[in-house]
Length: 229
Image (cartoon, rainbow, N blue to C red):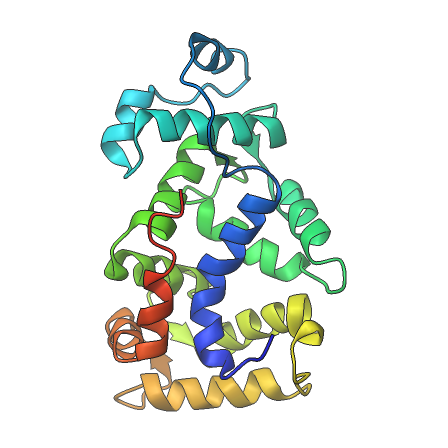
C-alpha cells in the first residue's frame, strides 16, 4: 500500500479498516432470508437487543439488513455483546504482521459510547450506521470522537500521535514505501499546521471538520464507502 499522506489515512482508516474487518469475519453478509428463526434467535442471547423496529427507526438500516447484521454479530459474539478482548482478537487475526492491540483499544472505546466495558448490538448498529450510511458531517464527528481520547472536546498533538502510532504499529510495516519510525510524529506536525487554525495547540471539532472537508482526497474516499451493504 502506497501512503500518499498519513494524515489522510488517519481519517480514512477509521472507516476502511473497520469495513474490511467486518467483511473478513462475516459481519457483513448478503443473501440471508428474512425468517422467523432470526427473530427467535434474538431472544436466546444473554443481551437481548432492542426491537428491530426501534433500531430501524434510529439507524439507517432496514429491518432485513439489521437481521443480516445480527446474524453475523451473534456468530462472533454468542453472548450478545463485544468486549475489548474480542475486538483485539479480531484485529490481531486480520493484521498478524503488526501489533493492532492499541488501535483496537481506541476503536473499542469509540464504539463503547456509555463506557461500560462492552459493545451491545445497539452500540454496534449505531456506530456502523454512521460509518457506512452517515453524512460526511456524521462520519467526521465520529472520527473526531475517536481521536479525542480523553473526551474533553479537543484533539491534542499527543492524542493524534497516539492514534498515528497505533495505526503505524498495526500496518506501517506493510506499507510501501516502508514508513520511517518518526513518520507518525512528522505527519502529526503537518496535520496540526493544517488544522489548528488559531495556533492554540489543540484542534476543535469545527477545525477538524473544516480541514477534512477541504481535502478532496478525504471527501472522495469517504464517498466510496457509502452503502457498502
